[in-house]
Image (spheres, rainbow, N blue to C red):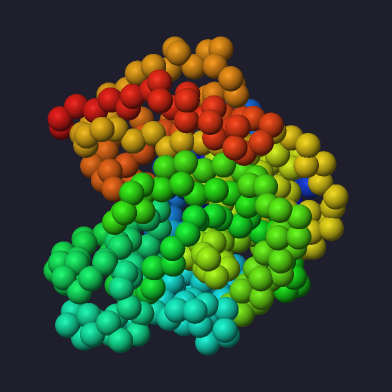
Length: 405
């Protein structure tokens, strides 16, 4: 009995392999480059999973490999890049899976905004037009300024820009980003701190597992910098937030699996920033495992098998440490040469640890979004607040070093 993962997030492969083993399933990783998972694989026993190298951007090549898998029972596709091909392959092989229509909707940020606006779950709508001047007029009449210019299929804060007036919007539209993954659109800017709800949904009901903080760079960019889990909310607000998230995901037809839902907590209540139909990336899921006291990846495997995840009903211990992490960006673009200050982490509170995400020699060219970080500084504490303080203190001792290419 085998479960296949079509690529994976940067971290969590070890947890996923352990979860599959505990559930009596073999895990196969289909990947175009095993080196991408070097940090995880170097700590795993060779028997933990099978690795098959295949061009994962070639759907037919992936299908051919899936056809060779004996006793294939489920397919996991937990990344933004391979989510939709994974959904199509799930349907082709008759495996359990969420309706691909819901995933396509969730991956289109403009359609999500419009769907939620129509359902009365957002106060703003999305506007788009290929003609820059017509888009400026739509923003002036429909969303107002400030507004946010986005990529409908963007990830990692790429091509996200705050525009405070028509002049800034015209200037942003005059740029032609080469890495645009979808269409450019605009939506209102909702002021307030941003969080990420970590949820699990099954049979159309959503459980809020906890909330992560999202601290970002100064306007007009939205570079992700610091995350902590779990954020403590006053009594009763957790239940209200869970009910709101249940309605949001139901409006999108999202009936099963994890979601990582970013929202701004405005003066008038929560507003969706975006809905990611997957578990949280970077070290979010690792922090969930430690804080909740369970391997949340078991729910991912169970969902792929079409069985109700035990995590939907379990009373989790919830007595583990809170966690926080800081993304490590260099001061200037160039080739990564190393990280200074790692020797100073020993003895600092929170057991800080550096998780590399780029190898030496890797180019770090895009410092305005998450493509530009070289690694993650992780630390723990009794609360998310104290974990954040410890992570920031430790990260402040480090310097990501680059040299001119």
